[in-house]
Image (tube, rainbow, N blue to C red):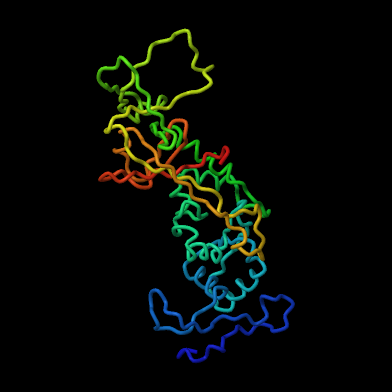
Amino acid sequence: MKAGSGLEWCIRARISVDGPVKCLRDPVVYCCNLRPHHRTGTTWKIYPTYDFCAPFLDSLEGVTHALRTDEYRDRNLQYSWIQEALGTHHVDIWDFSRLNFVRTVLSKRKLTLLVDNGVVWDWDDPRMPTIRGIRRRGMTVPALREFILKQGPSQNVIKLDWTSFWATNKKYIDPVAARHTAIPKHNTVIATVNGVDEPSSADKPKHKKNAALGTKKIVLGLELRLHLEGDFKKTEKKVTWLAKETINMIPVNLVDFDYLITKENLEKDDDLSSFLTPKTEFRTEAWADCNVTSLARDDTIQFDRIGYFRVDQEYQDGNPAVFLRIPTGKGD
């Protein structure tokens, strides 16, 4: 086995081949694997199994309590037996149920298929249910911490909706998201107003309720007549506009996403490829106000009447800035 020629061989722990508890029926603890290791290359040809390695390392590293999802519960006796047999430090196990979401696959094997087959960009794709993925989509660390702590280590199998997840995040980003303006190109209408001589500008707060965010420049190429008798709350249609000035029309791409999975609850034996949403990425070309040129990657903003966005790619050398839409838990 050390030479790599005994692929049909394995090393098993001698416990009880006919014991009433299946996990104690002489489990495999070592087997051959000829694939190169990412650190040691081809130095070793024999490796420990997870069930043997986990209790040993947990004990060696001084872990006091191992937090494990309940899918491993039927092997807890084996975990304890290995530590006792090796004479190592005993580790207590706390079981809890896995956190599942609707229309979402969490299996690493199935997620790997999505990456390898080009269904998503990579492991940090905003559609992926990974920490890197949800962070790239705009989830904040405080909101993630709050959501997880509220769930608690439940023993019940639960299937959560993403609504409450993103609603928690909105509480954190709304007070600090500077307000900006963007106009989708495919819906733009050019308006000419008579009586306007030269464009002017004015400084306005980025957030009406948070002066600490500073001010932004509003370019007026447009002059409106005051109509005090009107009531904007009763106006059926409201207009979002930008002055048609080169410095005030910054090209941007607004990117939104749909669920990767079409089925509410994907069963263990379901064929993943049969339940993939045909199109999950939607890009909208737009013009944004001049202030977006000062935004940096990972900044969170709100485009008025469109939604919240995270800067995924800054505006640079005329290349459009890329903004990823952050769900808010309402209608997402």
